[in-house]
Length: 167
Image 1 (cartoon, rainbow, N blue to C red):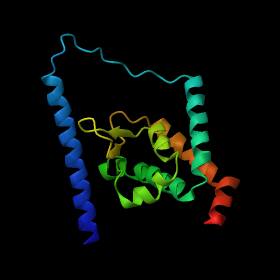
Image 2 (cartoon, one colour):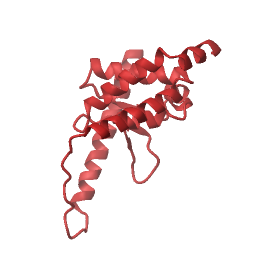
Image 3 (spheres, rainbow, N blue to C red):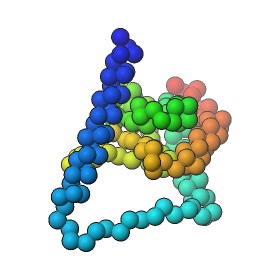
Image 4 (cartoon, rainbow, N blue to C red):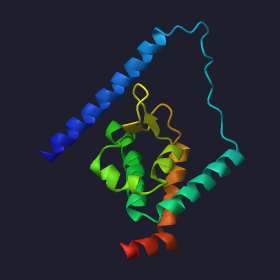
């Protein structure tokens, strides 16, 4: 029964993503803009960009370490994506989910960290994002693995250990 509800939730999430993508395509087809927008080519990250990203990840990870549940949840999520990279259910997070609210959302750096490793808020008609999605086509795996390494290192640190003891 539990497995069936998990499957139906992941199918519902997949269907919602497909609907949003179709809505986006339809909007673009019927848009009244006279000039097409230039497509941006992905740029290779330079050493300084990479270092800036790593510094940002470290700063957010230190804040996350103060709430071990949040750090553990994001680390669990990254590991699940690593094991099942094509599975949409691990790459889609429902912001309204109880588990999300009681773990990742408890830290001020939780959503920021997800955005740094590549998750994007899926807005629908200008509303606040209800889902954060790691899109397979735009995923920068280096960001994801760097995020995992930073969290694993922070998990071994003093801030995390102290917060664990206080729980």
